Amino acid sequence: MTCPDKPGQLINWFLCSLCVPRARKLWSSRRPRTRRNLLLGTACAIYLGFLVSQVGRASVQHGGPAGKGPHLSRDSAEVPFPEIPLDGTLAPPEPQGNGSTLQPNVVYITLRSKRSKPANIRGTVKPKRRKKHAVAPSALGPEAWVGPSFQPRDAAGAADAEVPGHVQGGHLGGPPWRGIQGPGVRGGRSDFQLPQARESNIRIYSESAPSWLSKEDIGRMRLLADGAVAGLQPARSRSGARLLVLEGTPGPSAPACGPSPCGLLKQPVDMSEVFAFHLDRILGLNRTLPTVSRKSQFIPDGRPRPVILWDPSLCPTSNETHSSVKLTWGTYQQSLKQKCWQNGRAPRPEWGCTDVHHHEWSKMALFDFLLQIYNRLDAHCCGFRPRKEDACVQSGRMPRCDKQDSVALQHIVQRKQDPRHLVFIDNKGFFDRSEDNLNFKLLEGIKEFPESAVSVLKSQHLRQKLLQSLFLDKVYWESQGGRQGIEKLIDVVEQRARILLTYITAHGAKVLPMNE
Image (cartoon, rainbow, N blue to C red; front, side, top):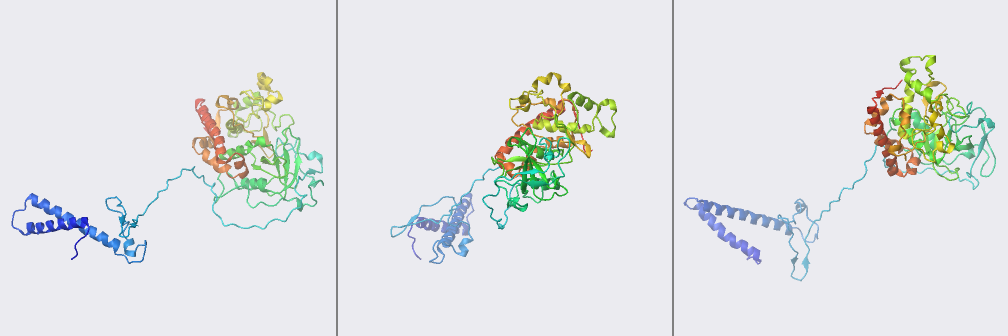
């Protein structure tokens, strides 16, 4: 039997030599087991158990095979963190005989803090996909794509930029397009096609598109965003819009302006029309034409611009009001009181009704209020304080606010085969108008509102749906500064939605299903 050489071991052996005989003597003697003897025996038993555990732990630490280094054996690996004392303290390293210090085998665990980030909206996270290397298009000559220009054979076929899909007194069609040879234009129809992009500008990363966008909407959006350009034709317009002619044969879901599908290319200041299109679909109104944002190298400044689908089925409009319905503010208010064509009831001649259904005005008023579009119902800016940049100030229409009943409504357009319903055109909205300067004149005379739109405004899901829908348009999303810029626009619309809901409650307006 070896004698212990460490002070701790000497103390342990000393206490053990005292406790063990004492415990055996107390247990085997015939004396009465007093409380003191029981306590003493219990203490000795606890101490003996502690010694046994210390001996077992020491055997685990030093019982491994030599030459393994810092690696643990299979048996020792099954014990979780055997080198950490039970009391939670770490002993200092033990000095060796040669003056070196034995480093303790300590396991350090680092916990990473959870990073906060905005919630992922469904369909806005691009999944990891295997890269597919596409074949590069054929090299183009230096003279290609400087700025192709086209014109129709008949100059009378020019389009009116204010109303996509019609001209003043008629519609574009008949004569095919022909190219004008000049700098940057190559002969032959196939040479005008732009190189195909590897990835569409309409991003859909989920299994399906959002439910409020139909298959026809997605197809038309991709046509406007990714279609090869065949020509760019100036149009007679005060806003400087041009007609974008796309390559290919129009399908059944893509209206055409002649032999090819077309889109109306507007100015960069009209980018809010893209937001208006998505808002219209989310609210369930379905009264706007598909609109996307697009950048092309044939545009001089290269800035993104909205492109609106050309629809030749729209009714011809007048030169002055750009409307297919002749209506003044006074007759409009009178028709709202008569509820023309509601419940299938034919109006009387003296009521002054038009072919437009009564519910269409409610949808238009709600849509215009959320975006503060004033060029339809308040072209003279009589319901708010306009700025010098507004069209009514530049054209000098403000002095006519004293005779509002005679002011004609503008941009009221129908389809030829469906005169009961309106088509919302020229949907340039304003997000910088303060709450104390909102145009409530747009809601004047409206006593009913569409249930589908009001339910979306009340559901607290408007922001999520707008983010998910606007994310599809890659060019528009990036032009507005990404999600941070889009969120600011949604903040404005959400605040106006709360004001509109308060207005509906305060005025006792009815919320009715308008799905006729």
